[in-house]
Image (cartoon, rainbow, N blue to C red; front, side, top):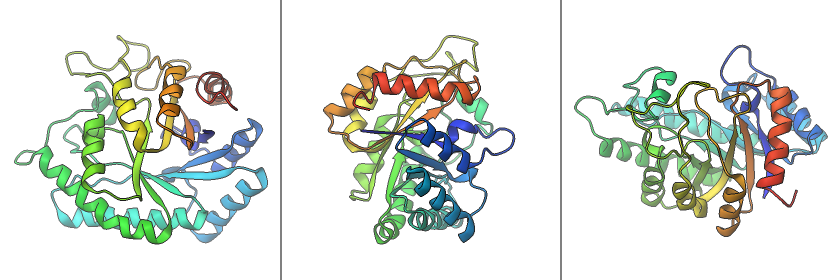
Length: 294
């Protein structure tokens, strides 16, 4: 396994975007092997921006190993799904131009709970739109991904479906999609912080320090590990932005090695302590407990 750094660790969708070139510098200073770029954090998509990132990574001796994008295939309207399919293909092209071998994708969600803070308070679950069902939504997601897979193969970019929110908040939903669209170009992004043990509205996830913490779902992690091409390792120094997990990374590391995983583990720091101090502590933690050979 190789340890990398997600640029998201320095920017949690709040305030001004943190420059990715600086994240690359931090990764090199910490002796990390790669950087995962958050697409929404990029300064631009024009050729000059892309080539500057490639040059910065090359001179720093750091791989650009993943591009984390946001798209949403859970739309009843085919025209809207087509827009997200086009966006995904565009991001596949960006990854190809950057020399990045994988993009993180999501399934999408209903958005019947409009705010992300409210969604987190509901354990990442939300009801379907009136007149529709989750079964319909799975069909839309599977069809949309299947439309993207030929372009992914053409460009040599693996689609990494994340255990995220909405339809993929549990291993069963991720596997339902993966098994319905079998392809060597569709794998799993296993996010250690998004697989929770049956959170419910009666036991909401805490915001920051309030309330009781949810529990990580190691059974779901084990179920997804054989399909993983990318792993996100969450840390929460200073308390989490939305909730805090006590993750046993020694156990997770053993699980990944047992599944034969040899790819990248991207640190996704999601705590309230300043990243300048929390990211180095997170790297030390993951080196000691998870990626022991580094």
